[in-house]
Amino acid sequence: MNVRGRLTAAVLAVAMAGTACAAGPSDPGAGRDAHGARTATPGTARPTGASGEFLVFYTQGGRDAAARAVAASGGVVTGDEPRLGYLVAELSAPEKLGTTPAIAGVTPDRRIGEAASVPTPPPASPPASPTPAPSAATPGPAALADPLSGRQWDMKMIGATATGSYAHPSARGRRVLVGVIDTGIDGKHPDIAPNFNRELSRNFVIDRPKDANGKTFDGPCEAKDCKDPVDVDDDGHGTHVASTIGSPLNGIGVAGVAPEVSLVNIRAGTDSGYFFLKPTLDALTYAADIGVAVVNMSFYVDPWTFNCPNNPKDTPAERLEQRGIIEGMRRAVAYAHAHGVTLITAIGNSGTDLGHPAKDTASPDYPLGAEHERKVDNTCINVPAELEHVISVSAVGPTERKASYSDYGVEQTDIAAPGGDLFAKDGRLTGVGREILAAAPARALRQKGLVDARGVPQDPSVVRECPPGGTCAYYQYLEGTSMASPHAAGVAAIIVGRFGTPGKNGLTMDPAEVERILYKTAVPRPCPEPRAYKYAKNDVQTCEGGRDHNGFFGHGIVSAARAATFTR
Image 1 (cartoon, rainbow, N blue to C red):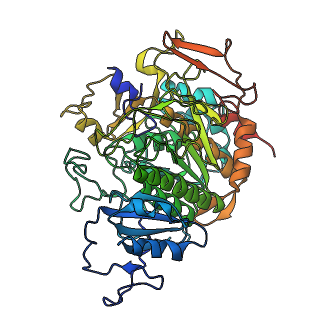
Image 2: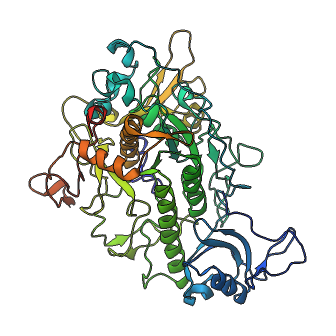
Image 3: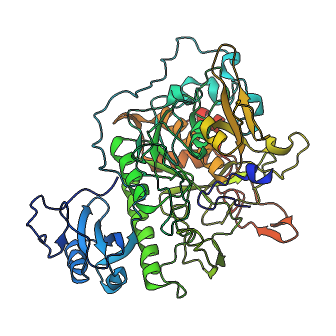
Protein backbone atom coordinates (compact mmCIF):
# COMPACT_ATOMS: atom_id res chain seq x y z
CA MET A 1 0.00 0.00 0.00
CA ASN A 2 1.30 3.44 -0.89
CA VAL A 3 -0.85 6.11 0.68
CA ARG A 4 1.24 9.06 -0.42
CA GLY A 5 2.54 8.27 -3.86
CA ARG A 6 4.68 11.40 -4.11
CA LEU A 7 6.87 10.40 -1.19
CA THR A 8 8.51 7.08 -1.72
CA ALA A 9 7.92 6.58 1.96
CA ALA A 10 4.20 6.43 2.55
CA VAL A 11 2.74 7.12 5.96
CA LEU A 12 1.43 3.57 6.05
CA ALA A 13 0.86 3.48 9.78
CA VAL A 14 -1.73 6.24 9.64
CA ALA A 15 -3.41 4.61 6.67
CA MET A 16 -3.83 1.40 8.57
CA ALA A 17 -5.71 2.82 11.68
CA GLY A 18 17.26 27.81 -6.00
CA THR A 19 16.62 28.72 -8.90
CA ALA A 20 18.83 29.15 -11.97
CA CYS A 21 21.46 31.86 -12.03
CA ALA A 22 19.87 35.08 -13.26
CA ALA A 23 21.33 35.66 -16.70
CA GLY A 24 19.04 38.31 -18.17
CA PRO A 25 20.66 41.64 -19.08
CA SER A 26 20.33 44.59 -16.75
CA ASP A 27 19.73 46.96 -19.66
CA PRO A 28 15.94 47.13 -20.27
CA GLY A 29 16.57 47.87 -23.92
CA ALA A 30 18.83 44.91 -24.60
CA GLY A 31 16.02 42.92 -26.26
CA ARG A 32 18.03 39.83 -27.29
CA ASP A 33 21.04 38.04 -25.90
CA ALA A 34 24.16 37.13 -27.86
CA HIS A 35 22.48 33.96 -29.08
CA GLY A 36 19.46 35.62 -30.63
CA ALA A 37 16.97 34.67 -27.90
CA ARG A 38 14.77 37.35 -26.44
CA THR A 39 15.67 37.92 -22.82
CA ALA A 40 13.32 38.90 -20.02
CA THR A 41 13.94 42.08 -18.10
CA PRO A 42 12.19 43.57 -15.07
CA GLY A 43 8.60 44.29 -16.02
CA THR A 44 8.78 42.34 -19.31
CA ALA A 45 5.48 40.67 -20.17
CA ARG A 46 5.34 36.98 -20.92
CA PRO A 47 5.16 36.09 -24.63
CA THR A 48 1.70 35.97 -26.17
CA GLY A 49 0.04 32.67 -25.27
CA ALA A 50 2.84 31.68 -22.90
CA SER A 51 1.96 28.50 -21.05
CA GLY A 52 4.54 29.03 -18.34
CA GLU A 53 8.19 28.80 -17.39
CA PHE A 54 10.23 25.80 -18.50
CA LEU A 55 13.66 24.29 -17.96
CA VAL A 56 15.26 23.72 -21.36
CA PHE A 57 18.13 21.21 -21.09
CA TYR A 58 20.68 21.56 -23.84
CA THR A 59 23.29 19.07 -25.03
CA GLN A 60 27.00 19.65 -24.49
CA GLY A 61 27.99 22.66 -26.57
CA GLY A 62 24.35 23.21 -27.52
CA ARG A 63 23.57 26.26 -25.42
CA ASP A 64 23.57 28.69 -28.36
CA ALA A 65 21.42 26.46 -30.57
CA ALA A 66 18.96 25.90 -27.73
CA ALA A 67 18.67 29.64 -27.13
CA ARG A 68 18.02 30.22 -30.84
CA ALA A 69 15.35 27.50 -30.81
CA VAL A 70 13.65 29.19 -27.87
CA ALA A 71 13.64 32.48 -29.76
CA ALA A 72 12.34 30.84 -32.93
CA SER A 73 9.43 29.33 -31.00
CA GLY A 74 8.46 32.76 -29.67
CA GLY A 75 9.88 32.10 -26.22
CA VAL A 76 11.92 34.25 -23.85
CA VAL A 77 15.06 33.10 -22.03
CA THR A 78 14.85 34.28 -18.42
CA GLY A 79 17.79 32.45 -16.87
CA ASP A 80 20.71 30.10 -17.38
CA GLU A 81 22.17 27.38 -15.15
CA PRO A 82 25.55 26.48 -16.69
CA ARG A 83 26.46 24.02 -13.93
CA LEU A 84 23.68 21.68 -15.06
CA GLY A 85 23.29 22.88 -18.63
CA TYR A 86 19.80 24.33 -18.88
CA LEU A 87 18.02 27.53 -19.77
CA VAL A 88 14.98 28.87 -17.97
CA ALA A 89 12.51 30.13 -20.56
CA GLU A 90 8.96 31.39 -20.95
CA LEU A 91 7.40 29.26 -23.68
CA SER A 92 4.05 29.18 -25.39
CA ALA A 93 4.67 26.00 -27.44
CA PRO A 94 7.28 23.79 -25.71
CA GLU A 95 6.57 20.88 -28.04
CA LYS A 96 8.12 22.91 -30.90
CA LEU A 97 11.52 22.38 -29.30
CA GLY A 98 11.27 18.60 -29.45
CA THR A 99 12.90 18.32 -32.87
CA THR A 100 15.91 20.47 -32.02
CA PRO A 101 19.00 18.20 -31.74
CA ALA A 102 20.62 20.53 -29.21
CA ILE A 103 17.73 20.14 -26.76
CA ALA A 104 17.69 17.10 -24.47
CA GLY A 105 14.45 17.81 -22.63
CA VAL A 106 11.93 20.50 -21.74
CA THR A 107 10.28 20.32 -18.32
CA PRO A 108 7.79 22.77 -16.77
CA ASP A 109 9.00 24.77 -13.81
CA ARG A 110 5.78 24.87 -11.86
CA ARG A 111 7.03 27.77 -9.76
CA ILE A 112 6.93 25.56 -6.72
CA GLY A 113 10.25 25.57 -4.95
CA GLU A 114 11.40 28.82 -6.53
CA ALA A 115 13.75 30.87 -4.38
CA ALA A 116 14.93 34.38 -5.04
CA SER A 117 18.46 33.14 -5.55
CA VAL A 118 20.74 30.26 -4.72
CA PRO A 119 22.67 31.53 -1.71
CA THR A 120 26.39 31.88 -2.14
CA PRO A 121 27.96 29.07 -0.10
CA PRO A 122 29.18 30.53 3.19
CA PRO A 123 32.84 30.30 4.12
CA ALA A 124 33.97 27.24 5.98
CA SER A 125 32.82 27.47 9.57
CA PRO A 126 31.72 25.18 12.37
CA PRO A 127 28.04 24.12 12.39
CA ALA A 128 25.73 26.68 13.93
CA SER A 129 24.61 24.19 16.56
CA PRO A 130 27.73 22.14 17.16
CA THR A 131 27.66 18.98 19.17
CA PRO A 132 29.63 19.42 22.39
CA ALA A 133 33.14 18.06 22.20
CA PRO A 134 33.39 14.51 23.54
CA SER A 135 34.84 14.13 26.99
CA ALA A 136 38.17 12.43 27.49
CA ALA A 137 36.44 9.42 28.97
CA THR A 138 34.13 7.33 26.82
CA PRO A 139 30.61 7.38 28.27
CA GLY A 140 29.42 4.14 29.78
CA PRO A 141 26.64 2.04 28.22
CA ALA A 142 23.96 3.65 30.39
CA ALA A 143 24.73 7.04 28.81
CA LEU A 144 24.51 5.57 25.31
CA ALA A 145 20.81 4.85 25.29
CA ASP A 146 17.82 7.18 25.20
CA PRO A 147 14.46 6.58 26.95
CA LEU A 148 12.67 5.23 23.85
CA SER A 149 15.60 3.18 22.59
CA GLY A 150 13.86 0.00 23.71
CA ARG A 151 11.31 0.55 20.93
CA GLN A 152 13.95 0.94 18.25
CA TRP A 153 14.22 -2.61 16.95
CA ASP A 154 15.66 -1.07 13.80
CA MET A 155 18.73 0.24 15.61
CA LYS A 156 19.26 -3.13 17.28
CA MET A 157 19.09 -4.85 13.89
CA ILE A 158 21.91 -2.74 12.45
CA GLY A 159 23.98 -2.51 15.63
CA ALA A 160 23.42 1.18 16.38
CA THR A 161 23.37 0.54 20.13
CA ALA A 162 25.33 1.14 23.32
CA THR A 163 27.28 -2.06 22.79
CA GLY A 164 27.49 -1.56 19.02
CA SER A 165 28.45 1.51 17.01
CA TYR A 166 27.69 4.01 19.80
CA ALA A 167 30.51 2.50 21.86
CA HIS A 168 33.00 3.89 19.34
CA PRO A 169 33.25 7.71 19.57
CA SER A 170 34.72 7.92 16.06
CA ALA A 171 31.64 6.15 14.69
CA ARG A 172 29.00 8.69 15.69
CA GLY A 173 29.30 10.95 12.64
CA ARG A 174 30.95 13.92 14.30
CA ARG A 175 31.96 16.70 11.84
CA VAL A 176 29.92 15.12 9.05
CA LEU A 177 27.35 17.23 7.20
CA VAL A 178 24.29 15.22 6.22
CA GLY A 179 21.83 16.93 3.91
CA VAL A 180 18.17 15.97 4.23
CA ILE A 181 16.43 16.76 0.94
CA ASP A 182 12.84 16.43 2.07
CA THR A 183 9.78 18.34 3.34
CA GLY A 184 11.84 20.20 5.92
CA ILE A 185 13.16 19.55 9.43
CA ASP A 186 11.62 20.67 12.70
CA GLY A 187 14.85 22.25 13.93
CA LYS A 188 13.28 23.14 17.28
CA HIS A 189 12.33 19.59 18.19
CA PRO A 190 14.31 18.79 21.36
CA ASP A 191 15.55 15.54 19.83
CA ILE A 192 16.74 17.32 16.66
CA ALA A 193 17.88 20.77 17.83
CA PRO A 194 21.33 19.83 19.24
CA ASN A 195 22.42 18.53 15.83
CA PHE A 196 20.47 20.93 13.60
CA ASN A 197 22.65 23.17 11.42
CA ARG A 198 20.55 26.28 11.00
CA GLU A 199 23.32 28.30 9.38
CA LEU A 200 23.66 26.06 6.35
CA SER A 201 20.02 25.00 6.05
CA ARG A 202 18.00 26.32 3.10
CA ASN A 203 14.43 26.09 1.80
CA PHE A 204 14.04 26.01 -1.99
CA VAL A 205 10.24 25.72 -1.88
CA ILE A 206 7.48 28.30 -1.95
CA ASP A 207 4.24 26.72 -0.78
CA ARG A 208 1.32 26.80 -3.20
CA PRO A 209 -2.16 26.87 -1.59
CA LYS A 210 -3.91 25.46 -4.71
CA ASP A 211 -2.85 23.51 -7.79
CA ALA A 212 -3.14 24.71 -11.40
CA ASN A 213 -6.84 23.79 -11.46
CA GLY A 214 -7.74 25.50 -8.19
CA LYS A 215 -7.80 22.36 -6.04
CA THR A 216 -6.35 22.56 -2.53
CA PHE A 217 -2.67 21.65 -2.75
CA ASP A 218 -0.49 22.80 0.16
CA GLY A 219 -3.33 24.64 1.85
CA PRO A 220 -3.07 28.10 3.45
CA CYS A 221 0.43 29.51 3.71
CA GLU A 222 1.82 29.60 7.25
CA ALA A 223 4.50 32.17 6.39
CA LYS A 224 3.70 35.64 5.05
CA ASP A 225 5.60 35.05 1.81
CA CYS A 226 4.56 31.36 1.60
CA LYS A 227 8.17 30.36 2.22
CA ASP A 228 8.60 28.49 5.49
CA PRO A 229 11.61 29.14 7.74
CA VAL A 230 14.45 26.63 7.55
CA ASP A 231 13.51 25.03 10.88
CA VAL A 232 9.90 24.18 9.94
CA ASP A 233 8.38 20.94 8.65
CA ASP A 234 4.63 21.15 8.14
CA ASP A 235 4.44 17.57 6.87
CA GLY A 236 6.61 15.61 9.35
CA HIS A 237 8.23 13.32 6.80
CA GLY A 238 11.57 15.15 6.70
CA THR A 239 11.77 15.39 10.49
CA HIS A 240 11.23 11.64 10.84
CA VAL A 241 13.99 10.99 8.29
CA ALA A 242 16.40 13.42 9.98
CA SER A 243 15.73 11.87 13.38
CA THR A 244 16.57 8.39 12.14
CA ILE A 245 19.83 9.66 10.71
CA GLY A 246 21.01 11.78 13.57
CA SER A 247 18.89 12.30 16.69
CA PRO A 248 21.47 12.87 19.43
CA LEU A 249 22.29 10.74 22.46
CA ASN A 250 20.87 13.32 24.85
CA GLY A 251 18.63 11.45 27.28
CA ILE A 252 15.54 12.43 25.29
CA GLY A 253 13.37 10.18 23.14
CA VAL A 254 15.28 8.21 20.53
CA ALA A 255 18.79 8.16 19.11
CA GLY A 256 19.78 8.15 15.44
CA VAL A 257 22.21 5.95 13.56
CA ALA A 258 24.93 8.62 13.68
CA PRO A 259 24.05 10.71 16.76
CA GLU A 260 26.70 13.41 16.34
CA VAL A 261 26.19 14.43 12.70
CA SER A 262 25.31 17.94 11.62
CA LEU A 263 21.82 17.83 10.06
CA VAL A 264 21.30 20.27 7.19
CA ASN A 265 17.76 20.92 6.01
CA ILE A 266 17.89 21.29 2.21
CA ARG A 267 14.19 21.45 1.54
CA ALA A 268 12.85 20.52 -1.89
CA GLY A 269 9.45 19.06 -0.93
CA THR A 270 6.17 20.93 -0.61
CA ASP A 271 3.91 20.75 2.44
CA SER A 272 1.80 18.27 0.49
CA GLY A 273 4.79 16.03 -0.19
CA TYR A 274 5.57 16.77 -3.84
CA PHE A 275 9.11 17.02 -5.15
CA PHE A 276 9.34 18.86 -8.46
CA LEU A 277 12.40 19.07 -10.63
CA LYS A 278 13.78 22.55 -10.13
CA PRO A 279 13.86 22.68 -6.32
CA THR A 280 15.40 19.21 -6.36
CA LEU A 281 18.13 20.36 -8.78
CA ASP A 282 18.73 23.43 -6.62
CA ALA A 283 18.98 21.28 -3.50
CA LEU A 284 21.52 18.90 -5.02
CA THR A 285 23.75 21.63 -6.42
CA TYR A 286 23.60 23.51 -3.13
CA ALA A 287 24.54 20.38 -1.18
CA ALA A 288 27.54 19.93 -3.47
CA ASP A 289 28.65 23.56 -3.21
CA ILE A 290 28.63 23.75 0.61
CA GLY A 291 30.50 20.48 1.18
CA VAL A 292 27.73 18.13 2.31
CA ALA A 293 29.15 14.61 2.63
CA VAL A 294 25.92 12.57 2.49
CA VAL A 295 22.41 13.38 1.28
CA ASN A 296 19.24 11.42 1.87
CA MET A 297 16.54 11.52 -0.81
CA SER A 298 13.38 9.74 0.32
CA PHE A 299 11.26 10.72 -2.66
CA TYR A 300 10.81 10.46 -6.40
CA VAL A 301 10.64 13.46 -8.68
CA ASP A 302 7.06 14.39 -9.54
CA PRO A 303 4.87 14.20 -11.50
CA TRP A 304 5.96 10.86 -13.05
CA THR A 305 6.51 7.66 -11.07
CA PHE A 306 8.19 6.24 -14.17
CA ASN A 307 9.86 8.60 -16.61
CA CYS A 308 9.61 7.31 -20.18
CA PRO A 309 11.59 9.11 -22.91
CA ASN A 310 9.56 7.67 -25.79
CA ASN A 311 6.27 6.24 -24.56
CA PRO A 312 3.91 6.36 -27.59
CA LYS A 313 0.91 6.83 -25.29
CA ASP A 314 2.33 10.11 -23.95
CA THR A 315 1.98 13.42 -25.75
CA PRO A 316 5.07 15.04 -27.32
CA ALA A 317 5.13 17.60 -24.49
CA GLU A 318 4.91 14.84 -21.86
CA ARG A 319 7.79 12.96 -23.45
CA LEU A 320 9.89 16.13 -23.48
CA GLU A 321 9.05 16.69 -19.82
CA GLN A 322 10.13 13.20 -18.82
CA ARG A 323 13.35 13.46 -20.84
CA GLY A 324 14.07 16.71 -19.04
CA ILE A 325 13.54 15.12 -15.62
CA ILE A 326 15.86 12.23 -16.48
CA GLU A 327 18.55 14.44 -17.98
CA GLY A 328 18.34 17.15 -15.34
CA MET A 329 18.57 14.72 -12.47
CA ARG A 330 21.41 12.82 -14.13
CA ARG A 331 23.37 16.05 -14.35
CA ALA A 332 22.57 17.14 -10.79
CA VAL A 333 23.48 13.75 -9.38
CA ALA A 334 26.73 13.69 -11.36
CA TYR A 335 27.55 17.22 -10.17
CA ALA A 336 26.97 16.29 -6.53
CA HIS A 337 28.90 13.02 -6.84
CA ALA A 338 31.85 14.83 -8.43
CA HIS A 339 31.85 17.25 -5.49
CA GLY A 340 32.10 14.48 -2.90
CA VAL A 341 28.45 13.85 -2.03
CA THR A 342 27.37 10.29 -1.27
CA LEU A 343 23.80 9.98 -2.54
CA ILE A 344 21.30 7.71 -0.76
CA THR A 345 17.69 7.24 -1.88
CA ALA A 346 14.56 5.25 -1.09
CA ILE A 347 13.81 2.74 -3.84
CA GLY A 348 10.01 3.13 -3.81
CA ASN A 349 6.84 1.79 -2.23
CA SER A 350 4.75 0.13 -4.92
CA GLY A 351 6.01 -3.48 -4.50
CA THR A 352 7.22 -3.36 -8.11
CA ASP A 353 10.13 -5.15 -9.76
CA LEU A 354 11.77 -2.10 -11.29
CA GLY A 355 13.58 -4.30 -13.76
CA HIS A 356 10.27 -5.53 -15.19
CA PRO A 357 7.67 -2.75 -14.82
CA ALA A 358 4.43 -3.25 -16.74
CA LYS A 359 2.10 -0.39 -15.89
CA ASP A 360 2.03 2.98 -14.17
CA THR A 361 -1.27 4.04 -12.63
CA ALA A 362 0.01 6.99 -10.57
CA SER A 363 1.28 9.40 -13.23
CA PRO A 364 1.16 12.25 -13.81
CA ASP A 365 0.21 13.12 -10.25
CA TYR A 366 0.07 16.89 -10.87
CA PRO A 367 -2.30 18.66 -11.34
CA LEU A 368 -4.34 16.66 -8.87
CA GLY A 369 -6.50 13.98 -10.47
CA ALA A 370 -4.52 13.81 -13.73
CA GLU A 371 -3.35 10.22 -13.18
CA HIS A 372 -4.17 7.62 -15.80
CA GLU A 373 -3.01 4.08 -16.45
CA ARG A 374 -0.32 3.59 -19.07
CA LYS A 375 1.92 0.74 -20.10
CA VAL A 376 5.60 1.08 -19.20
CA ASP A 377 8.69 -1.03 -19.76
CA ASN A 378 12.32 -1.13 -18.64
CA THR A 379 13.17 1.95 -20.72
CA CYS A 380 11.12 3.90 -18.16
CA ILE A 381 12.93 4.73 -14.93
CA ASN A 382 12.17 5.88 -11.41
CA VAL A 383 14.15 9.02 -10.56
CA PRO A 384 16.41 9.28 -8.63
CA ALA A 385 16.40 5.60 -7.59
CA GLU A 386 17.60 4.27 -10.95
CA LEU A 387 20.29 6.84 -11.69
CA GLU A 388 24.02 6.18 -11.73
CA HIS A 389 25.90 7.22 -8.56
CA VAL A 390 22.75 6.84 -6.43
CA ILE A 391 22.55 4.13 -3.73
CA SER A 392 18.99 2.74 -3.71
CA VAL A 393 17.68 1.22 -0.48
CA SER A 394 14.95 -1.40 -0.11
CA ALA A 395 13.05 -1.90 3.16
CA VAL A 396 12.94 -4.81 5.59
CA GLY A 397 10.84 -5.37 8.70
CA PRO A 398 11.76 -6.79 12.12
CA THR A 399 11.91 -10.36 10.73
CA GLU A 400 14.42 -9.18 8.07
CA ARG A 401 12.13 -10.14 5.21
CA LYS A 402 11.74 -7.58 2.45
CA ALA A 403 8.60 -5.58 3.14
CA SER A 404 5.84 -6.26 0.63
CA TYR A 405 5.49 -2.58 -0.27
CA SER A 406 9.19 -2.16 -1.07
CA ASP A 407 10.16 -1.95 -4.73
CA TYR A 408 12.98 -4.24 -5.78
CA GLY A 409 15.07 -5.39 -8.74
CA VAL A 410 18.40 -7.11 -9.21
CA GLU A 411 19.79 -4.11 -11.14
CA GLN A 412 18.10 -1.48 -8.98
CA THR A 413 18.48 -2.59 -5.34
CA ASP A 414 21.86 -1.69 -3.89
CA ILE A 415 21.33 -2.32 -0.20
CA ALA A 416 18.57 -2.94 2.36
CA ALA A 417 17.73 -1.36 5.71
CA PRO A 418 14.96 -1.37 8.33
CA GLY A 419 11.89 0.41 7.00
CA GLY A 420 9.11 -1.29 8.92
CA ASP A 421 6.69 -4.09 8.07
CA LEU A 422 3.28 -3.95 9.71
CA PHE A 423 2.49 -7.50 8.55
CA ALA A 424 5.77 -9.18 9.57
CA LYS A 425 4.53 -11.15 12.56
CA ASP A 426 7.38 -12.43 14.67
CA GLY A 427 5.66 -12.92 18.03
CA ARG A 428 7.65 -10.18 19.75
CA LEU A 429 6.31 -6.98 18.24
CA THR A 430 2.71 -6.06 17.57
CA GLY A 431 0.94 -3.48 15.43
CA VAL A 432 2.75 -0.20 14.88
CA GLY A 433 5.64 -1.52 16.98
CA ARG A 434 6.82 -3.22 13.78
CA GLU A 435 7.35 0.18 12.20
CA ILE A 436 10.07 2.82 12.67
CA LEU A 437 9.84 5.25 15.60
CA ALA A 438 11.39 8.70 15.15
CA ALA A 439 10.80 12.36 15.97
CA ALA A 440 7.68 14.16 14.72
CA PRO A 441 6.71 17.88 14.71
CA ALA A 442 3.91 18.64 17.16
CA ARG A 443 2.23 21.13 14.82
CA ALA A 444 2.05 18.66 11.94
CA LEU A 445 0.56 16.01 14.23
CA ARG A 446 -2.09 18.45 15.46
CA GLN A 447 -2.98 19.49 11.92
CA LYS A 448 -3.53 15.83 11.01
CA GLY A 449 -5.69 15.22 14.07
CA LEU A 450 -3.18 12.80 15.57
CA VAL A 451 -2.75 14.98 18.67
CA ASP A 452 -5.61 16.90 20.31
CA ALA A 453 -5.65 20.47 21.58
CA ARG A 454 -4.43 19.29 25.01
CA GLY A 455 -1.44 17.58 23.43
CA VAL A 456 -2.77 14.05 23.97
CA PRO A 457 -2.00 11.53 21.18
CA GLN A 458 -5.16 10.33 19.41
CA ASP A 459 -3.56 7.48 17.46
CA PRO A 460 -1.35 4.55 18.52
CA SER A 461 1.24 5.61 15.95
CA VAL A 462 2.08 8.69 18.07
CA VAL A 463 4.17 8.62 21.24
CA ARG A 464 4.52 11.57 23.62
CA GLU A 465 7.49 11.77 25.95
CA CYS A 466 7.59 14.36 28.73
CA PRO A 467 10.91 14.30 30.60
CA PRO A 468 10.88 15.63 34.19
CA GLY A 469 11.24 19.37 34.06
CA GLY A 470 11.57 19.31 30.27
CA THR A 471 9.45 20.01 27.21
CA CYS A 472 7.18 17.28 25.93
CA ALA A 473 8.21 15.91 22.54
CA TYR A 474 6.43 13.72 20.02
CA TYR A 475 7.49 10.67 18.05
CA GLN A 476 5.70 8.70 15.37
CA TYR A 477 5.75 5.17 14.02
CA LEU A 478 5.96 5.15 10.21
CA GLU A 479 6.97 2.59 7.61
CA GLY A 480 8.23 2.80 4.05
CA THR A 481 11.40 2.81 2.04
CA SER A 482 11.70 6.45 3.13
CA MET A 483 12.31 5.09 6.60
CA ALA A 484 14.89 2.58 5.30
CA SER A 485 16.97 5.08 3.34
CA PRO A 486 18.01 7.25 6.34
CA HIS A 487 19.41 4.18 8.10
CA ALA A 488 21.78 3.73 5.16
CA ALA A 489 22.54 7.46 5.13
CA GLY A 490 23.44 7.26 8.82
CA VAL A 491 25.82 4.37 8.21
CA ALA A 492 27.39 6.28 5.32
CA ALA A 493 27.93 9.19 7.74
CA ILE A 494 29.65 6.82 10.18
CA ILE A 495 32.02 5.79 7.39
CA VAL A 496 32.81 9.40 6.47
CA GLY A 497 33.29 10.23 10.15
CA ARG A 498 35.85 7.46 10.51
CA PHE A 499 37.78 7.78 7.26
CA GLY A 500 37.03 11.26 5.88
CA THR A 501 39.44 14.16 5.66
CA PRO A 502 38.84 17.86 6.37
CA GLY A 503 36.93 19.68 3.65
CA LYS A 504 34.54 22.59 3.27
CA ASN A 505 32.39 22.87 6.44
CA GLY A 506 33.18 19.31 7.57
CA LEU A 507 34.72 16.00 6.64
CA THR A 508 34.76 14.79 3.05
CA MET A 509 35.35 11.43 1.39
CA ASP A 510 35.27 9.94 -2.09
CA PRO A 511 31.67 8.70 -2.58
CA ALA A 512 32.94 5.62 -4.43
CA GLU A 513 34.95 4.61 -1.36
CA VAL A 514 32.00 5.30 0.97
CA GLU A 515 29.86 3.08 -1.26
CA ARG A 516 32.48 0.32 -1.28
CA ILE A 517 32.68 0.22 2.51
CA LEU A 518 28.90 0.50 2.89
CA TYR A 519 28.47 -2.63 0.75
CA LYS A 520 31.46 -4.40 2.30
CA THR A 521 30.09 -3.97 5.83
CA ALA A 522 26.51 -4.93 4.99
CA VAL A 523 25.25 -8.30 6.22
CA PRO A 524 24.45 -10.45 3.17
CA ARG A 525 20.97 -11.92 3.01
CA PRO A 526 20.00 -14.45 0.33
CA CYS A 527 16.77 -14.58 -1.62
CA PRO A 528 13.93 -16.42 0.14
CA GLU A 529 13.11 -19.97 -0.88
CA PRO A 530 11.12 -20.39 -2.96
CA ARG A 531 12.31 -17.29 -4.79
CA ALA A 532 8.75 -16.48 -5.86
CA TYR A 533 7.79 -15.18 -2.43
CA LYS A 534 4.07 -15.06 -1.67
CA TYR A 535 3.06 -12.09 0.46
CA ALA A 536 -0.64 -12.54 -0.23
CA LYS A 537 -2.93 -14.39 -2.61
CA ASN A 538 -2.40 -11.90 -5.41
CA ASP A 539 1.00 -10.60 -4.36
CA VAL A 540 3.90 -12.81 -5.42
CA GLN A 541 7.29 -11.15 -5.85
CA THR A 542 10.28 -12.96 -7.35
CA CYS A 543 13.81 -12.42 -6.04
CA GLU A 544 16.66 -12.72 -8.54
CA GLY A 545 20.40 -12.90 -7.86
CA GLY A 546 22.77 -14.58 -5.43
CA ARG A 547 23.55 -14.33 -1.74
CA ASP A 548 26.02 -11.46 -2.14
CA HIS A 549 23.75 -9.38 -4.35
CA ASN A 550 20.10 -9.86 -5.19
CA GLY A 551 16.96 -7.96 -6.08
CA PHE A 552 15.42 -7.99 -2.58
CA PHE A 553 18.41 -7.03 -0.41
CA GLY A 554 21.14 -5.82 -2.77
CA HIS A 555 24.49 -6.30 -1.06
CA GLY A 556 22.76 -7.00 2.26
CA ILE A 557 21.33 -5.18 5.27
CA VAL A 558 23.34 -2.15 6.40
CA SER A 559 25.36 -2.53 9.59
CA ALA A 560 26.39 0.40 11.77
CA ALA A 561 28.29 -1.99 14.06
CA ARG A 562 30.39 -3.42 11.24
CA ALA A 563 31.00 0.04 9.75
CA ALA A 564 32.18 1.20 13.18
CA THR A 565 34.88 -1.46 13.35
CA PHE A 566 35.79 -1.91 9.68
CA THR A 567 39.50 -1.77 8.85
CA ARG A 568 40.58 -0.57 5.44
